[in-house]
Image 1 (cartoon, helix red, strand yellow):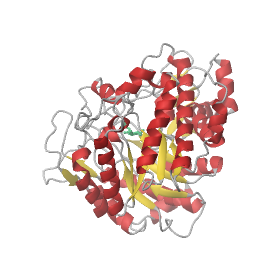
Image 2 (cartoon, helix red, strand yellow):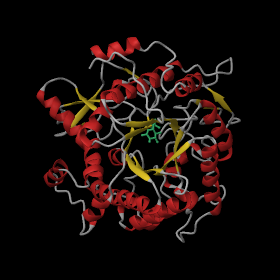
Image 3 (spheres, helix red, strand yellow):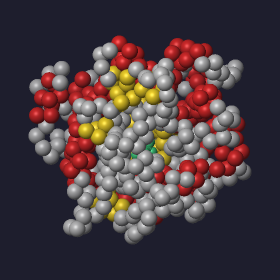
Length: 489
Ligand code: BG6
């Protein structure tokens, strides 16, 4: 595809960043918030930091919003803590929880920043876990519906963009890592029952939003990692398609078409899996028509035919040292591998800006729905330098090239209405605490020492601010070469 002009962005494009309550707020034991399962899950990953301090956004939100405004943000995507809003089984709403989120929303709106809210980002209240057995029991559907309705009724007058469940696909694929598999005796089969219950919760959220929020729009947040086949060997192609289905397409098809696709049904049959679909379930899902897809896209993966002699369920690098990623290998399905054509982060995540353009085109071609980028980001080891600054050149390069590829996708004809990379301030990584930093703003705290939690603008903050204020024209460098490279690839 050859273009004469550099890409341009729509004039009301949402430029912002992203976060999640438990990763940024801290104050887990303050003002009536009750524990969430993720607090305990984080503690099992010690020596990584727990959530009680995080980036202390709970106490710094005014300063954080002022920095967003200085950067030029027009949007901010964050999540609500269910256990801060409804701390106990009696379902009483915590006035302090309401107050915090009302203050944050009002502060954002006063700064000209549109809030985009995720209802659920991995932090199930412990009381829900105890009462319902986590996602394993259908009684959670009613609790989740009640929680969503509380959010829409209290914030829907000002918040018009909503997201249902963050990365449901990754919660199922990485069930052990994110704590969803807790209490399951046969995860291989049980995960499909859990997934179906999550789909019903997602559907409830979509329906309630449309019922209660005037002008409200809502969508799911798949974690999208496109899979390139390792070679043109036909077996690798099919393995890549299997990986695509089993890590994301099953979810995306369900959200958009509101029925399980034939791959899913065949897979269940083949493996003797009963997802426990009951009368009325599919009718409920059918009513949940989404308005857009919120896309989290950090990286691509490479799929190849599996080695059928062993099983490696999930792929992870737990150390933060390059080259230590353990790749999944699922006999009869697929294996994943290192892509030698791109660089990796210290956690071995492929740095592949083209995957952003690829993902947007793929999703547009399949689903024809508007999209907003709600995550993409560079996680690295960082600390304040001797000059008291953070020179995060790698993050700038990452964000520049990923944002540019959103522009190229728009030029290709895809409808994208915002870019909200991960993350605004440094915050807790899902498994690597503060050791893996993503922020445009450095927060002076570490896993071992809370320090003074002061905020420091990184070089990426300054670079991003110029990009935002020029609405995607000031890239800080000449992008023609990058565009040529893309064209001729
Ligand atoms: C996304 C999650 O999958 O990836 C975030 O929505 C998470 O919660 C982000 O922090 C980066 O992953 P990690 O493991 O590096 O924190």
